[in-house]
Length: 147
Image (cartoon, rainbow, N blue to C red):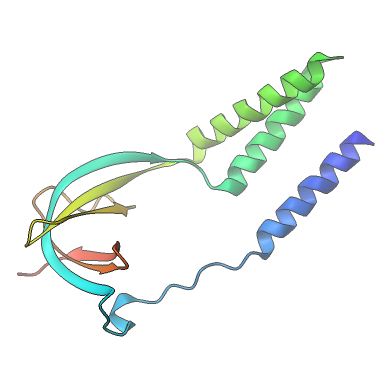
């Protein structure tokens, strides 16, 4: 009975997550000009590599499987403790396997103001000339400048 309840809860959570609508992205060149949208030219002043965790869905799956395995190993009162530990271990293994490294670029415009930007590809290097768009104080687009 407990296993059935766990299965139904997991199915409900996955169904709710599947029903969420993704955010619609609008290219910055199609946005209206406004005071909140500013285009800059500058350069990459620093790059830091950042480890990004796996998606929440994959973390949940890893935790769920870890809890199931841990719950089978533990017996009696240790069942809950080992099941909980298994959930944390499963999440950690999932982050190691499915997490990714991304670049955090520090961009400096011509006036010397710095902006942070996360980039998935390793396409930029320190000193590259770039053009970037800032929307609501957030870098939304970045390209190599052709000055």
